[in-house]
Image (cartoon, rainbow, N blue to C red; front, side):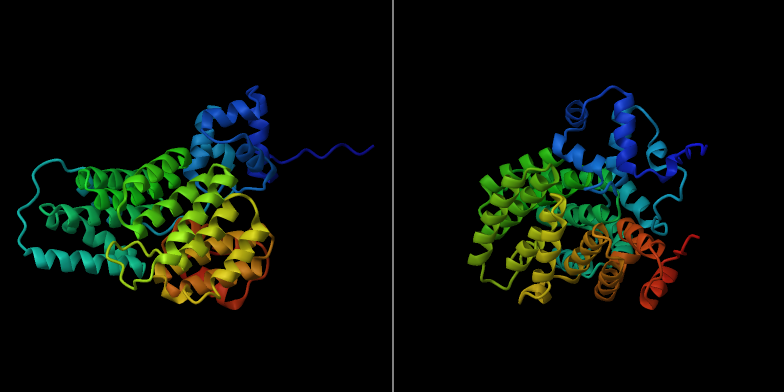
Length: 383
């Protein structure tokens, strides 16, 4: 008589491990969802593997609710690969932690404006290591000019979200709103950073509330449209399909009226940004086939090339995630290669991109370009 094979805990998908550990705690899906601030549908999709658990911040929240070490969920298998140490994060953290008087500015207001404009350009081209090095001094330089300091805090928050330092990003975004001091447009643009940071932390309901409150007072259609996009993605993140689609439609209506080529608030709003958000919302809602359809439509659109390189490269990383969800590692690898060609730091510095690249490599024989990229970023295929 054959003895039953004992299941290796490490071979169990993480969603199923969550379900087993939740059941051991005697928690229903609804009670578990309430403690996480998520919907019951979100929990069900996680446990069935429909949605991926690929953010350590969310895994940590789940572990806190289950009263266990996050490593028990991850298992002793090789941990998700992390980006090479970016020492500049410590410098930004130290600069944000300062409450004493800033050093006296030694540049003119015009020079400070040019430095902030250059920092925005560096962000839009995904020059993250360079930005990390420059931000502490830029926070000092812009300290005496409210609008420039808000912009600098926004840049810091955006970079920190990219590099998976969401707690620190939230601090920078909150400083941006505080510095804006109630100015409608300045506060609204600062709130876009708050929405991004809160979504990265998994606080989708808070992100939705913040974005909609700011949209009510925004006096610029492009800013209001960007806040609607943030709100739609927050709604999608919490499984609220109807609200997500309604908000995307509101943003699309504003984008269709947007005819200016200028972007004074550095938000990149327009029809192409809406198409990209429709893709991401569909993916967050678990409709992967629809998401891939939206992605393929977006990259063929007239406005695709007008999106900043950072935006296009980030979109392609999200597309790689969607392709992997359907088991298509070939297209996932190609999306990562395309992202690397557009903005290399998106793949080479961001933890989520490196995790996806590792999954492509581990899934079987990879294309030569993908294997070369894995070698460049320091990943090797595990036996």
